[in-house]
Image (cartoon, rainbow, N blue to C red; front, side, top):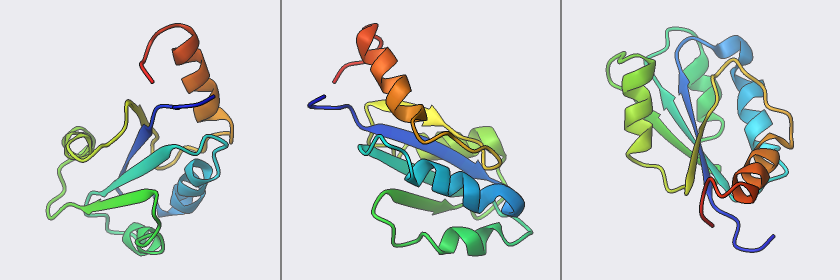
Length: 117
């Protein structure tokens, strides 16, 4: 499909180091390529920040480091302010997406006129 809409996936992170790497990689390994991942690190006290720092130069990832712990909803609002996507999606830092998740969701949305390309 041509002119596929850009998808912004928002991930807020607070003390999820056990699952974080796999969660990030499950987005980066999507078969749908026109996407960005916005990660908001919300002052974790575990090593979540060091895991995120491994992706600091990745072209599909934007990282925001909160100065104070704001919680999930405030962090999502911060991420929304930097999204470039036509479609916004969410992934929790302890979730893993199958590699066709976003492709299937976009296809469904386009088929049912739920978004514009």
